[in-house]
Length: 246
Ligand code: 6PG
Image 1 (spheres, helix red, strand yellow):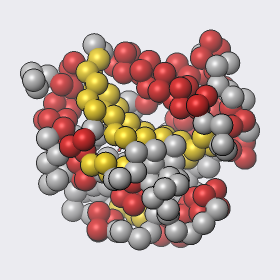
Image 2 (image 1 turned 45 degrees about the vertical axis):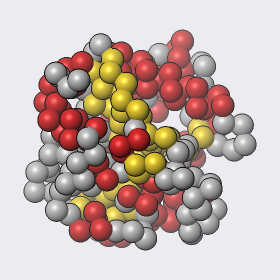
Image 3 (image 1 turned 30 degrees about the horizontal axis):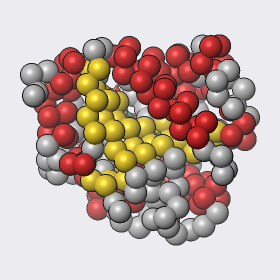
Image 4 (image 1 turned 30 degrees about the vertical axis):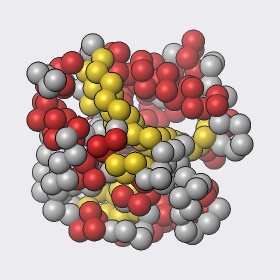
């Protein structure tokens, strides 16, 4: 049964550190509970997940995780050269993945060496190879966990307002050329995000108050509020982002 954002659980935490710690707990719980195959997680980009990555890389946390059973993907990527400071994988690699024993073959960075369309197609093939099929089965989600951020324009992943990719209902990966953020982007589409056992939004800071309220209310005029899941949706937000919202 598909879950939409109005059925999401909002967890309000004291601050961004508590949000990162809660996300780390959810990840460890999910990984340890998954015994019938690899735990496939799509990491979110931007600045919010950095603290989470630092926490997961600390020895006390890192040793809790059977990294050989974790497969790492990304929800989106800026279409910049490999190693670029603004690449989500550059951050993931430097803050987390280079510091934990996750097998290199388990890390699936979004390619950025071709055109955005070519790289989106290549990433879709990677996802299909990992999934073992070219059609998503609602009973067998592609991802065990999809982490998402929330932009101040209401975007999530690289599903930006007004972009054609918002209409994509078949492809698993698409491109975006946002007017409100730099770089062409490669992004999971709504169908790929929906193919999840759990979606977790990480939302911190006062700049997100308006969009968090619209997200929680299910205001479908913002892209993030159109996210669905075959499983659960949790919104982890700190007090600063929740503001005066009851
Ligand atoms: C990206 C992200 C994007 C991000 C939001 C929030 O590549 O930028 O995937 O969706 O999650 O813009 O960004 P912050 O965490 O920096 O506020």
